[in-house]
Image 1: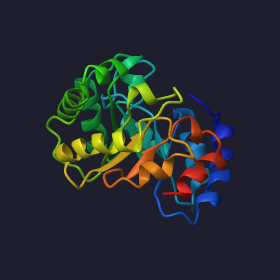
Image 2 (image 1 turned 180 degrees about the vertical axis):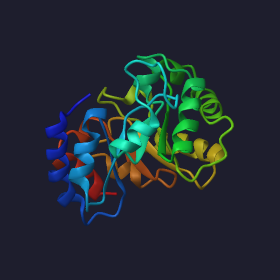
Image 3 (image 1 turned 90 degrees about the vertical axis):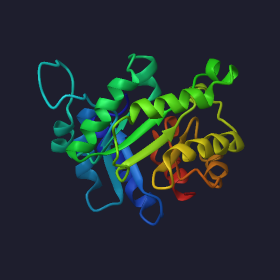
Image 4 (image 1 turned 135 degrees about the vertical axis):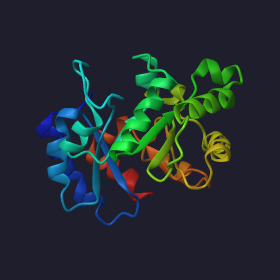
Length: 228
């Protein structure tokens, strides 16, 4: 929940030239209100604009909610679903997230699906069990993988200053790869910064990163992109 309409547009205008020569795809998930201004500012650049969440319904009496068609109309190209904050603060279930993923794909959006375990679950040696359940239930009945990206974000490493070691992240991504196959891109998210991103990206099963706090400053974020 950062950036006003003007701030988001200004951010994109500053970021775009910094990443113009970089190889990785650059996706920015911005607040609903800033999608149109960010998309306009990103025209002609390699920066793609998306949303941080959406509702599973096509339309209806869901006051305050935003549908996939509304996101597309505003200019969004993708949507992040199942983020740990949506799961743990707002109580979203795997079943609800599954309906959202189906709706987003049906409407033509790319999906970044987030999965991850809490510190208690990791300490109880339940990481693989938790991730398997999240994936199976969140992707139940979904055959299309072409427009799907999965982001592993250990909850204990989000906004805490802690990050999983590159070895731990790779071990977990290797497990996820065994469930998802080679065609699905996988990102690591959890206190990713310019000074640690290279370690994560050097791992064979980590295709990219999902960046939180370090993405709020265009120069900091550009340094991460440039190492991709």
